[in-house]
Image: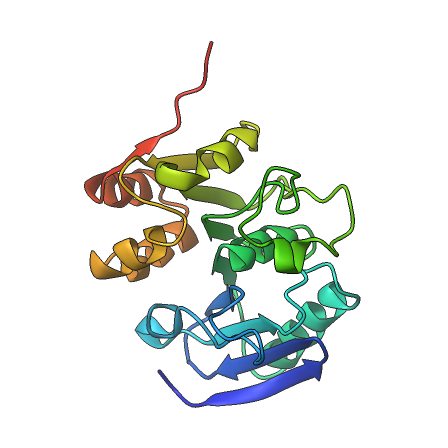
Length: 229
């Protein structure tokens, strides 16, 4: 991955950039990370910057699920700074867990082509959801994941422990929801990386090639969500 440059530092948010000559941009949102005492690290670095794509890496030190003040302004500032340097034609947001939730929130305000959300929570502070209680107990309520119209959306969930969250996402035109029976919240992202699919997923999502994207995911054990009639 190319060296990272800090574009915006407005606590709790930090946005770092990797240079690239492509006019495709990937914005990768970090999950909560493994060390609560430090800001999360950039994620999806190799896949985001493949094909000489520029990339923005967005970290949230407060683990606020993108609810801390300034989220939209920070993204707009970072994107404007990059666009002042080069032409950007297509933009994809990607993230896992909290980062996936943030990617969906970013799709509300940024001119995204597509968003890929791996293990997003629909209701991170649901009363029955205890996995992130240390962070989510202070989140504003009610807080649910948005599914904005416009960009192509792809949601991915592992059913071993994320079925309850997955079921809460309503069906929506332009949104593909793919379920993995043999994966969990934590294992799904590493599984996709181990299968070597993330770069291809980004390529297909940027091109809005739903057939290719679904073919890749089905090859890794995913199935499109079937809703009751």
